[in-house]
Image 1 (cartoon, helix red, strand yellow):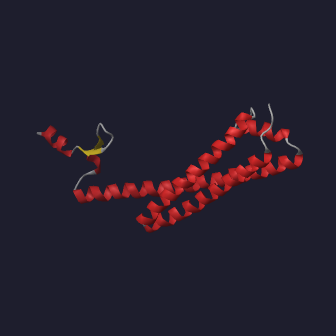
Image 2 (cartoon, rainbow, N blue to C red):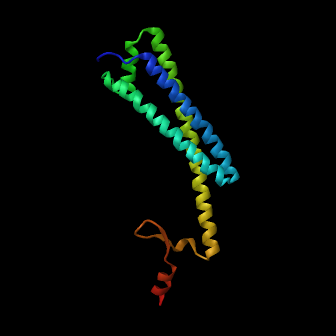
Image 3 (cartoon, one colour):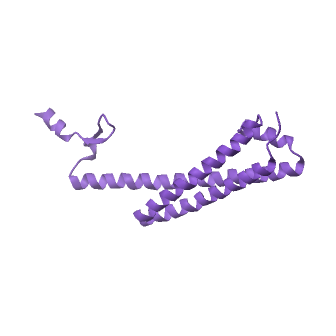
Length: 162
């Protein structure tokens, strides 16, 4: 291992990463409410805000990873444990506390994202079923075409009977 990256810089980037994740966490809660209320305008605004927060988080991650890589430390669990082992006890505790907080918020964001994705998927499926009913299409007559789009093959079925 070469020179360790400056701990103050790593901790500052980790704290900034936590702030970006907290922002995402809040936006996902707002998205959940907007999904419940079917507020399309608010959802569009939230998607833009989430995209911006994700870009900021990605940049933060890349800078932090580059600091580790330039010091010969792999930015994975084993590398971070090796980095922490090189620190004195007080610095190791601070680093560990911040890193654990980052992981905790990341798991919360992941769970909330899955929750919202489930709602979107369910709403999309319900909408497709309602549209099929309005069009007089039988769900059993739906197949995917070459471009991956859903198509109705009921006419093919009746031609086959002829």
